[in-house]
Image (cartoon, rainbow, N blue to C red; front, side, top):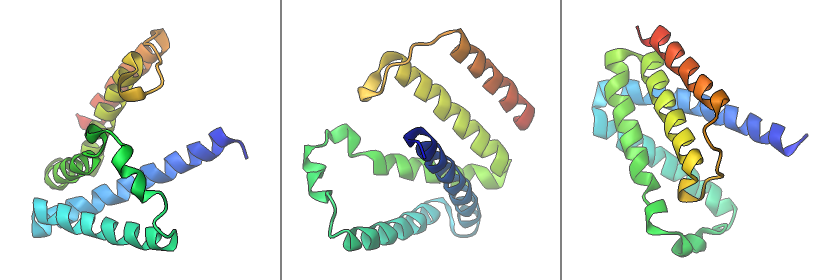
Length: 145
């Protein structure tokens, strides 16, 4: 199996996990509250990551000191993501929330790639990418309306 195919399968599995996590966050947010939902989901993630790292004997965890500070705030983004999902899903629905979040993520990713920000591989905007974004906007409008 090629590396690209394997990475693509992993990305799809990640997308499915995001869908299930979003669904869980929406239900938890509605039943126990937004920040309570964020806490419960992150606690579950912490426990699973700790178990996996224990089996890996810590892996390369000690290398965290070599990472720039702005990369270490990724956990804070997770709080924002889960809080917005927990808040929005019970109000506008799972498909609308995830669609808006994914489109925002794709547009930001294209901008980061265009300028090569934060060490990303630079891929300049071209007609194909611009057309793809227009299709994203059209699809978003069809789902959200």
